[in-house]
Image (cartoon, rainbow, N blue to C red):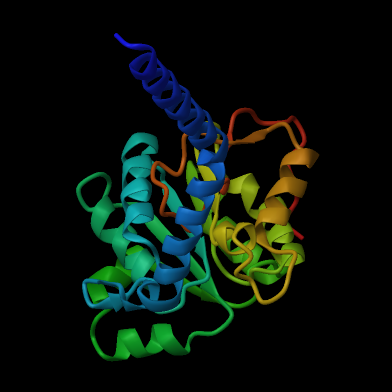
Length: 253
């Protein structure tokens, strides 16, 4: 090998090493950029088009798969959702649980019943589904609504999804109120944390800030580092798993 050839090989090797080191250094930034671009595209154009059995379900399909797997593993006795919208997620849970435990009640809460009523009146949410799904109209953190939810959920294995008002204070109130319905090994999922993380909220702080404050205030829950299972999710850092139960339980208020 000539001196010139050795120099070329050396320079090429050094260049490759430099590029590899540069990529490793920039990979988190590149990954973040890619995730942001995908989330912005889906958030703006696709999320609101999804349907489940004809009913609007404003969720990412990847999150629905995660929910289904968790429900299969946990076998909850009640599922609680705040933020009904059209009712598609409640219908999704009702149909998934048909093959797991058809006696499970899905409790869904929304301050506005207009979209839910339309889906019911137009026959997409059938009487059979309504036997499984309990719709409660009202503010999710009001004492009246919490008392109504408690009639179905107290003392049972609950799985909770919070997806209503996304302001920090409201989500934090929901976390403090609805976490009591989540048993050890189960989850409370805070939806749309991605909006704040990616700077897509019109105003902040929001759900992600509420999660951080809640986790700091308790050692009963942890952010599950393995969930969501995909990059594309409405709830990064939003799957909160109960690992223990403190002696003092929160009162309905």
